[in-house]
Image 1: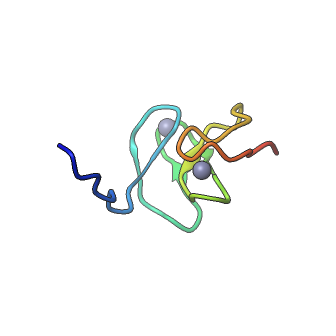
Image 2: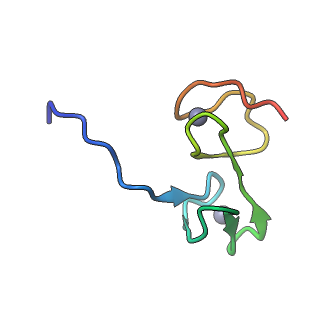
Length: 61
Ligand SMILES: [Zn+2]
Ligand SMILES: [Zn+2]
């Protein structure tokens, strides 16, 4: 595949990879944690990460 398509908005838990339903305030039912989202790309980022794995932006709390 040479064309890089934009993924449809689908948020997955950074801890267990299950799909998150609520985009506004993503909460993983499996982990029972509120998932922090990168302010730059809006993708879920594990709280122990200092850098967004999706876009490389600094996400330190
Ligand atoms: Zn989870
Ligand atoms: Zn990001």
